[in-house]
Image 1: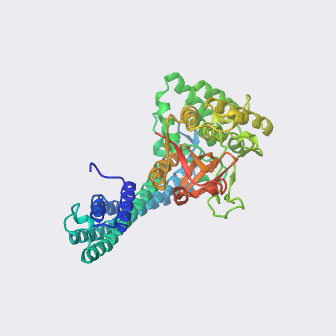
Image 2 (image 1 turned 30 degrees about the vertical axis):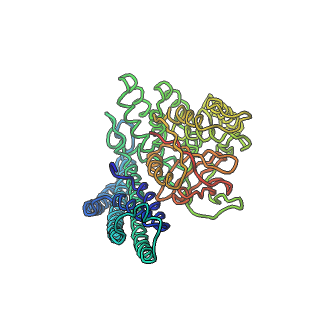
Image 3 (image 1 turned 90 degrees about the vertical axis):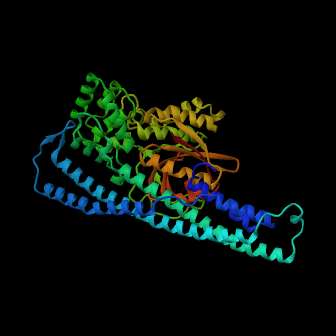
Length: 523
């Protein structure tokens, strides 16, 4: 055996070995199953080191809380309406953003400490259980002696059968302990990775690294939300946006940088500035951003959100309100522009779920693209009927690009990957990679990659299956053990990671659908 298996591989192999042991009807089969189980590596990790790191994180919580109190005192003392930073933000706004950043820092330290300490506890428990199980397996193996030869295997007397059954019972208990330990270690590792990745993505201001931007600039750009729904779940710039925007700022030549700085300084609101940076992050040229800025300059935050941010996450979006008669979640957030949904075919009548999912994903990460759909050539339109026509035309264009079926119906995995690359990847700079998910273990193993991508603000297209067909969706968010998914029937909703892994995806669409069987991951 070369290397160390993944935690999911260990879980699967030990489940198979346990089943082989419990059903072994010969001495040699039982010996083979025991050897298989003992050949799987024990849970790895230094519990003491992980625990020490968790305690260090916990020690930082008080310091971060004191920082927040100091910032709050500064805000209460009254600040002059002074302009600071390249992006011309009010000092009072900066202090408010700093206060929120301090609160988020304390939450991140606390959350990181909690994740690490829980991981240490569960890993220690798994290692102890694994050790007990290995002792039982070795004892059972010793009871069996050497393997039977061909002739010996033909007959088993009562004494030999009794010894084998006793060894099998002991080995089954030992293998079950190893499998329990593997499940505990696998779940703990995935949960810790999920939570730590999420907290890392929440360290938002530090993601924006660009020459000429002050700490105040970074704070404000990272802090600004759309103004709709829960502010913490509707920030304009994702962690990935902030990183790409910083890189692009540093790649601009002197003329382009001067033009970008001027647009930022002339912006009428923090939201306007954030959308300019998001447009830059999406790979648009400075000339395209200049035209975009002329269209949005001076518009209200509500107008900007309506035209540029199709998905809004409400504060109660994650509440479990039960299921509709068709099996879909009752709690859904509509995705719409002035009453017209971001829906496949404009009304749900066409089978363009793939192109519709990809289109909406691009609109979420590229405000220039979103405005072309909502605002038309002038960028000023508010007509839902005109929006619907542009939406359907773009769905059809992408459907044809992906070699979709006749009558605007269906698209294969090659086409799904092609338009994910050309459309979402064009804005994020990612190459999307098609992966099949044929089992619970496949979904379990790939889930941390999905969660990390969406926590950073990179949508992840998926497909769910039913008898006779499938449906394309996009994972667009993650909080705790829940995934937020956009359905091109015109809504977002949430699903638990357990339901995603175990094939209970009916809440995302309806009860006809079972497993998530395809995913398109940004590399």
